[in-house]
Amino acid sequence: MSPHRPPEPVQVIKQRRDAALQALVSAVPYIGFLGLHFDRRGDELTAVMPFDEKLIGNPELPALHGGATAAFLEVTAVIGLAWAHYWPQFESGALDPEAVAGGQLPRLPKTIGITVDYLRSGLPRDAYARAEVTRSGRRYASVRVEAWQDNRTRPIAQATAHFRMPLPPRDTTQGEGAA
Amino acid sequence: MDETQALEIARQFISSLPHARALGMSVVQIGPGRASFSMPYDERLIGDPETGVMSGGAVSALLDTTCGAAVMSHPEMAGLTATLDLRIDYMRPAVPGQALRAEAECTHVTRSVAFVRARALDDDDENPVATAAGAFTFTKREDMA
Image 1 (cartoon, helix red, strand yellow):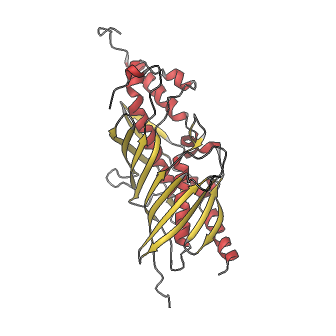
Image 2 (tube, each protein chain N blue to C red; image 1 turned 120 degrees about the horizontal axis):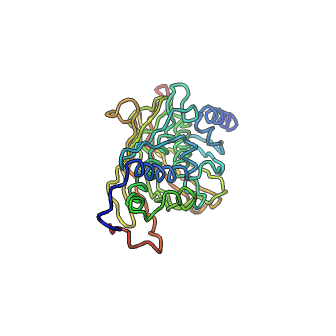
Image 3 (tube, rainbow over the protein chains, first blue to last red; image 1 turned 90 degrees about the vertical axis):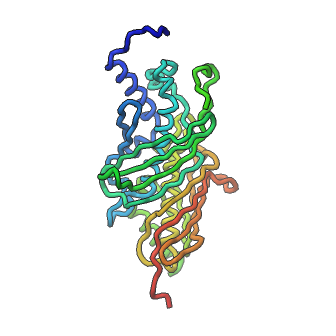
């Protein structure tokens, strides 16, 4: 790869990044079940959980089910971590978004444990979440994730999760940054 | 209240929760401060497309619901409960194709908080898929004579 390569047109870059994200997200059936999607700004992701009747726990309040909130946080953490982990490989071309979309999926991090704090009752409306990788090593990673609804400064729940990272594939280890 | 009545109330409880219904949860057992619920294997709940293992999120939802039911079934409980915090440790992947069963028990209650422990199992009763420890809101009955 020449360092004097002209910059790529912005549409090409956007198209590649969005295809990579879409491939990663659409591979997980449970993300579809919850109805989640991810907004991307550069490398920053915001997960969106549009309100749906089936996410309700207590129909009398009504409030989001604690399990739906926990699942939302966990999925946001998994995708956020995988995205941060594979981003350099999508950018360098080591991972091809079209191949990923075609079913050659990179492996996802495995959850070791998650601690969810419920801060406020989840209202029957859309929820948003962002994950922050607080520690990313070769074998383990830690992620903090926060969910909110109408007001960014009044989160409904937060979580810390630990993950076991996927081992690098046998043939492309040279592109892997050490932790 | 006899066991049959308690089971019936628990069935009504679970079927009144849209999210529990969407995940196909059903009551296995209910007792004072205890609950056991199951959730069938469902391809829509897969979290790892490579292996077909159900998502940790679905396991969390089952554990949270079962813990909540254990709190609701506590003899000193008056009112409704909500999760304050829930910690889940994933010991091993659930075997694809097998239903999951969660067992929860209130270990202690104060006037305002119930502490609950739970585990999730597939067909292997010896090795849990996941364990959970949580704190839930609790309202102690004042009329306990």
